[in-house]
Length: 319
Image (cartoon, rainbow, N blue to C red):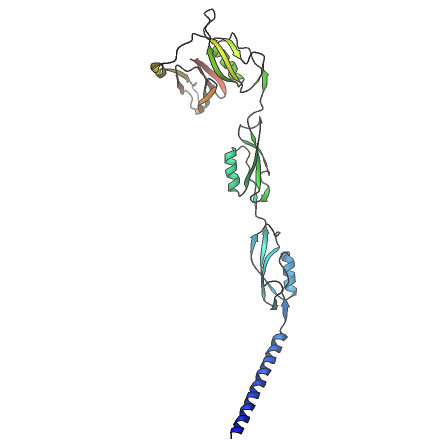
């Protein structure tokens, strides 16, 4: 009886083994009978070429997105999934990420801007400020951008430097120093102002035989080659006074001028020239018939110049 049971058990085991092997080989045959392909290397290839390769292999193309890249040219493949070399069934998806190329921006127009403002605009546009070169230029305001590289509107990569050429003011003019000796102080100041020079010092040298406030000496001397912004020192015939006291310091003189009546606003610029330093008191549009005035310390020495529409209409010496 036991032998019979063992015999039947052996038969069942053998049957199970045969059935399992049969199922294995059948499944293997079914799997191998299906078409499979090896995923090609697509990274670095043009997206059109990649589509053609995948189509020929019976694979589907799925573009998951695009990215900027400094290393991969525009419209080329950055990444793929599955990776190159993997064996997959046909009709499977191959996911691609396409390059948009380097990220680029249009260079902003910086001409006419101050260097500080130009730097802010450059940074706001994802660029960097490069070298700043300065030169004299008559066609632009002092301390303003007159040229740039790359030029405005050009498309460039982000973070490249933008170089600027900045004006340091008009081209300097040279001329012979005029002879101021024998002129009165107010006349001499007008000459100095008309040549864009600066009055640095007025030295009092009293000579009772000459009129008060007459120029008796100057530096640079007459006939010397000088330029705009030259510092001028004058010797003027006047009684030397002592240092102003506390009461004198509080005294004031008044400069005033009334604009003519009319209908249009006037551009008014009032400047004070005091020992080589020029201060702008007014520089704006004003209504007709407006009274313009300014107070100056009585003990100070210098001059006030009033320009209306860039024309000198009144000057006054004070000391």
